[in-house]
Amino acid sequence: MSAPKILQPGEIEAFSSAIPQLHPPAADLFRARAGRLRRIAPDHSLAAYLGFIAAIADCQQSLLEGLSDLPEAASRHIERRREHGLPPLAIDGWPRDPVWRGLARTLATEVAGDAPAQAQAVMDRIAGSSDDWLEDQASALLALDLARVDIAASTIIGAALQVYWVRLARGFDPTGVARPDPPRLCPVCGAHPVASVVHMGGTDDALRYLVCSLCASHWYLERVKCSNCANTRDLGYHAVENPKSAIRAESCPDCHSYLKVLYRNLLPELDPTADDLGSLALDWLMSDEGYARSGVNLMLLQAAPAPREAH
Amino acid sequence: MELSRRHFFKVCAAGAGSTSLAMLGFSPAEALAEVRTFKLAHTTETRSTCPYCSVSCGLIVYSLGDRAKNARSEIIHIEGDPDHPVNRGTLCPKGAGLLDFVHSENRLRHPEYRAAGSSEWQRISWDEAFTRIARHMKDDRDANFIRRNESGQTVNRWLTTGMLASSAASNETGWLTVKMARSLGIVSLDTQARI
Image (cartoon, rainbow over all chains, first blue to last red; front, side, top):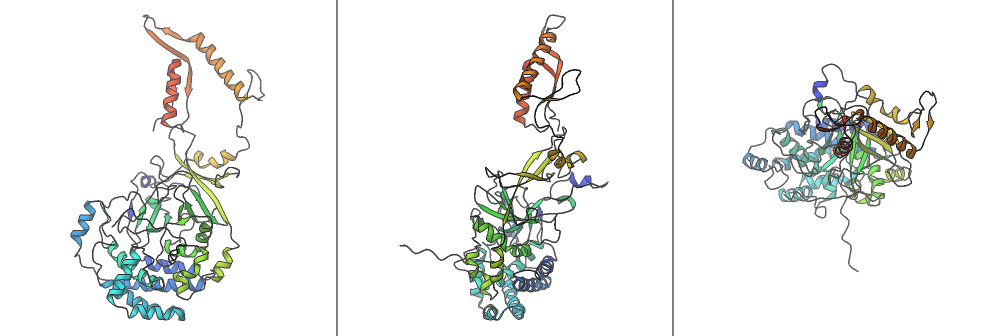
């Protein structure tokens, strides 16, 4: 619901060009996330938690900048996946570089000072963890096998995996990546979206992109379309209190799922991960309405409900 | 990797205690208390086509309400459809004013008729309107229909009436328009299907 767009001379050419299908993650992704979290935290009912995630994001940014080029060991594997139209940097099927385990341990040590007393044991556990345990937790987390995931440790392990995959996605040539069909998984790494964002300015003005929860790539999806089942009929848009809010949940009457849409053309500083956390109230209200969440935010996971016992 | 796998999450207030947030020692209590005072607002986004000209720009129409049967829905915003290949989100000044056109007090809401020589419009029913249009068409066609040309060839032309169809019509509507108009012999037909 932006103001009518008035094109200036020279701008009309931009709109005659093809729609950009994929944007790799930005170099200052985590810094922007931390900044946004700190702006929304002060008046927020989850202020302490948002501040902690901001501290994690700061640490993620410095780790990302410190990561040198990763070995090209898997390039043949990447090319083969690309040929077959599969996500080239897929979350499984090839060994993760051990460097990510160092990232996880460093993160746990660095942010321990910002964590509540209760979290100290969790941070110590990650900092002193074995390689096997970390790899097992990473595999469970990436597969979203929540019964196996150590939920308390998932935030730090997820944050380390994000740094590693953002580094991979930034050092990777995105040309020729297949358009995902159905569009619900990241075309680069195959992970789930955290939310979708309506861009502002340039050739992608007002276009909607899904944002990867892992590698933070943005991939194009038409507006008014269910990101889960591709239905285009009778989609609902739900917001907390204000129907013109810049954060809305796009719900599908067919598959009863929803994904948030962040309208950057209404509020340019919206950050997918930060504002998804900041709008947790919307998730709770959507859950009351019977909708299931299709977005994944590695910074906030909820344990899988215990299997119901047979009577 | 299995591409079809799908995970849904019940991120519900009732399970807030089992989140990574709570397990790290942060309290969701204040947020949980706050959410009880919040209401969910429902809107709808619908794709449409601008009715003004043959460019047929794509639109997204925003309305209040969730289209539930008894709920009143109200159009609150209209903007260019950024995905539409014709206009990529842009609109001309007329298209940009569509919301005022929708809510205009001067908008025509029912058929009206102004008798020849009169300055007054009078409201008529749809049945009356269709009957009048059919009568005029029939009279004009009976008077001016050309069955054969000068060299005696069958042409079945009706040149004294033309038809302008809607720019927002779909392919199927365009097909029906052509079938109807051509079967009557109408030559001057503009379906506005130029782009």
